[in-house]
Length: 173
Length: 327
Image (tube, rainbow over all chains, first blue to last red; front, top):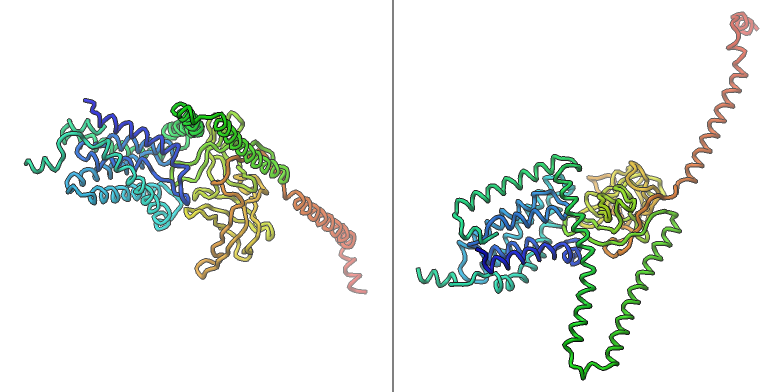
C-alpha cells in the first residue's frame, strides 16, 4: 500500500539527488562538497526507523556512484550498511529525547563517510589514510551533519509516521 | 522503499539486505577489474553525460525561478502601489544587472583572448557548466564535447595558466580533471633551471612538485611550465610558480609547493587547447646549431688527422718506420 509517508520519502529522495547534482557543487567550502544524499538517508533512518529498509539507501548510493564518477558500488554499500544499522540502533535505543537521533545521525554520517573513504583508498586513490581523514572524511562529516540537522526538523514534520506515537505505545504495553 | 519492509517479515528484510550487499560488492569488484570500456564504466559515462546536462539546466532553472518570482510579485501586489515609476525602476535594475553580467563575461572572454594571443595557443573557448558533486573528485564539466572535436587528454587553460585535462567526453560535454585533483599529474619543467619534474594535486588543495633532481632544486618564485613529456599536456604552457621549498632530512628534495596561476573555482570560461606553439623552439634551434658545429669540428679534426696519419696508415712498408727510427 502506498502511504503518504512513502510518497513523501520518495519525493524527498528525488529532491536529494537533484540537489546533490545542482546545488551541492556550488556550496562547497575549501574543496569539500556536502553529501546531501547521505544526510537525507540518515535523517530518514532516524525518523522512520521501523519501516526503514535497504532498497532506498542502496538505490541512492548507486545513483551517487554513477553520477559522480566514483567506484560503482562503494557508496551503495556504505550508505546501505550504515543507514540500516543506524535505523536499527535508533529503533532500539530511542528514548524520545533529541539527543539520541542526533547522536545516531552523527555517528551514521561519520561511518558512511569513513567507509566510502576507505573504499576509495582501497581502489587506489592516491592519498594517505591520515590525509584522507583530515582533509575529506572529517570535513565532509561536519558538513553533512549540518545539512542533516537542517533537514531533521523538516523530516520530523513530513516523514514521521502518522498514528500513535511510540511513547504512548510503550506506555500502553 | 521503506514501507515495503513495514509489511514484510524480518526474514525477507534480511534476505534483501544480504542480496543488495552482495550486489554492491560485486559491482565494486567488477568496476575495479574491468577497463574503461567495460559495461559499468559505460553506464557510468552515460549517467554522467545526462547529469552534466542536468547541471546545465540548473542555471536555467535559477533564471526561470527569478522570473517566476517577479511574475508572482506583480500578480499579488496592490495595484495602488504598483506605480509606473516602480515598474520602470525594476526594469532598469534588471537591465543594469544584465548589463553588468554581460560586461563581466566580456571581460573574462577578453582575458582568455589576450591569453590566447600572448601564448599563441589555439583552441576553443568553453563554458563551465558543472562542477563535481563528490568531495573526493576535483573536476569540472564544460559545454564542449566530442561533437566539437574535444578528445580525452586535451589540455584545459584558464585566463593565465593550465588548470587541467579532459578525462572523459560525451557528445556535447566533457569532464575535466583539475590539476589540484590527487589523481592528476603533469610533467613540468622549471623555466630557469630547465629541471624536469612532476606536479601533483593533493587533498589539501596544493600542488606539489616531485621527482626533481636533488641538484636542481628550484627557488621560490621560479616559474613552472608543462614540459610535454609523456605527451599528457601540451608543451610550454604556464602552470604556476614555486611558492615554498622546505628541505627535510628525510627527503633530499624537500617539499616543493607550486601555486597554480589560475583558480578553477573562480573561472566560468576556459580554453580547450588544441595546439600550443613550441616555446622551446629557439632553445631547440640553438641546440641543433651547437650540435651541427660540434659535428663540423669533429669532421675537420678527423680530416686533419687523416692528413697527418694518412701516410702512415697507407704505408704498408715497415722500412719507413725503420728508416725513421734509424735516422
